[in-house]
Image 1 (tube, protein in one colour):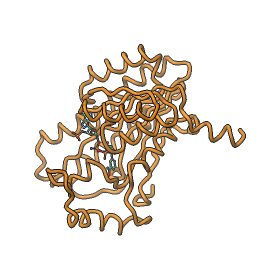
Image 2 (cartoon, rainbow, N blue to C red; image 1 turned 135 degrees about the vertical axis):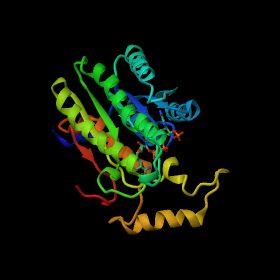
Image 3 (cartoon, rainbow, N blue to C red; image 1 turned 60 degrees about the horizontal axis):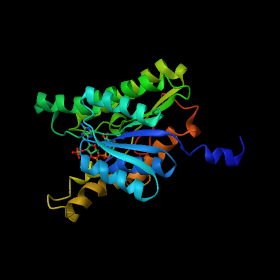
Image 4 (cartoon, rainbow, N blue to C red; image 1 turned 135 degrees about the horizontal axis):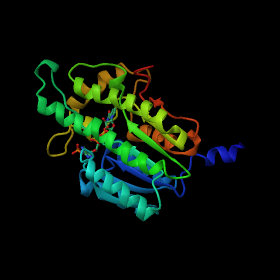
Amino acid sequence: MDATTLINSFRVDGKVAVITGAGSGIGRASALALAGAGATVVCADIHHDTATETAEEIVAAGGTAEGVRLDVSNRGDVDALAARVATERGGIHIWANIAGIMVEGPFLDAPEADLDRILAVNLKGVFFGCQAAGRIMVTQPEGGSIINASSAAADAPSPNIVSYAICKAGVVQMTKSLAIEIGKKGVRVNAVAPGFVLTGMTGRYFIRPDGTVDEEMQEAVIGPMRKHTPLRSIGEPEDIAAAVLYLASDAARFMTGQVVRPNGGVAMV
Ligand code: NAP
């Protein structure tokens, strides 16, 4: 492959992508990255307004996108979205399961309702997305690429996030097992495991209800993160979107069942 062909293999022109969690943070940045590289992007989020905002940003920049409300924990809705997109857009080539939530608290006191809630979104939601996308992709001559959001929490245990960590570890195993099962059909399944990234999920530690930033609290959260990260920085959503784009594209045509770790070096596996 010559250099021009190689750099062009990072483009995703003509591909149809569905991104969950596309209304915020890493999902939003991934949607913008894929659209910028040529994909038609279906921006799905539990919040219709933010999903639509991401899609509108893509369209304003000259791309093709739509925003839809989707609760990834609702299997029927996930299946229906996949079926509609495949019919209307001529297939699904990229599906990124990025939507996720955080539930925190001491393990010994964790309520069952909290466990059910996080399993429903972070584990079953990814399962449903993989299933819906996989069923369509295995029928396509061109196959497809599924990307799942895991976390450094699956590599480097931290206190008070046990339910989150087991979901993210489950996502890794789901990714590998599914990759084995459908690789022969030309469908690749990989995961990204980000380190600490400033998003809605992490910003809630220091963003007040009125939207202003508690700077003292922000430094109290981010300072130690930076200090314990070999690169001495925290991530931006685009740092993860770059990995999503790579895994989605033909540049990663020989990658499946892998976990890519844009994490500043905080975990090395
Ligand atoms: P984010 O900014 O909170 O974005 C996630 C989006 O998904 C939000 O709009 C969220 O809505 C939405 N969502 C929640 N439940 C949903 C559901 N049932 N169906 C559809 N959408 C739903 O979070 P992020 O930081 O970008 O995280 C994206 C992914 O990366 C997550 O899977 C997260 O676990 C993972 N991750 C993040 C970090 C980090 O440091 N940020 C590190 C490692 C891994 P709400 O705002 O209402 O919840």
